[in-house]
Image (tube, rainbow, N blue to C red; front, side):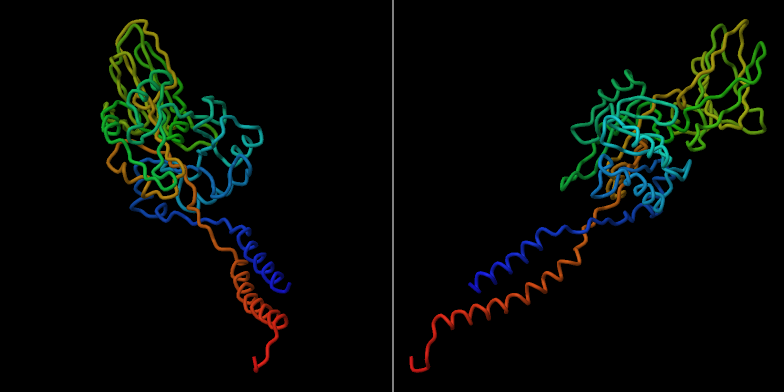
Length: 372
């Protein structure tokens, strides 16, 4: 009987150790704060947003929004345009009112990339519409179709899925570098989505002034597209004592500048304080001023999912024109619970007790004498 009790005690201790949860913890990705990785990607124009925290899901625990933001901002700025993160990757296809409010209160302005494409005053939802950059999965045809249908292309990238290392598609990347696309990020695209307003017009010119980014966005130059009917544009100049560069089709990354498109259009990217005069030749010309895209190119966005090792995620793209929105999360780090060492000590103490009890019980059941 004593043997059975001792065995039950030992078994209970061992089973308890198996059922005790370990403490879910995380460690920072050291590459974020390194100039040779995090600093270089930041200088190139990449964006850093949030994707979550280990062991937590935004669908079940909304505290992950603030925790991920605090982690990210303690490691790196969100962009060369602004310090605070604007983009959050979520797994849901729709947002409830509480999630929407918490994201907005924490300063996020873009969500994706499973959410249906809808844009409102304070929160953009950018849908993944052009597949992946993974080898044998990436498709130039899908990218082209997405741009024709939606006006933009958004692809995703994940360097490691479980224990599987994912390879990029070199052919599609090489093809992308030859395209007349605006290689941008979620936050840059959102923040530059404002256009100039007319301040003066004559029979042969129009003067426009830049506008400010939306509330909560980064301070990014806005994109304007001006068209003319009944005339031809002849010149573009800043008249606020600053210069403005003429863009070419080789300019794929956001910068201040202009380009005359086929004589009947002007694509213009200027900051809020810029004043620009555009002149033309023609009589009774009609001018339209509208929202544009940088250099009149369709936006192309690549999104790095679950980026917990920036070096591994970004190294395949060091020489690419593509710019990334890196959705950051810390690296999981499972820490052993303090209870486990105590349980180990209890097991060590229980074994000799059980052995002694067993020997005593056997001796009482089967006594013997030295004569035997």
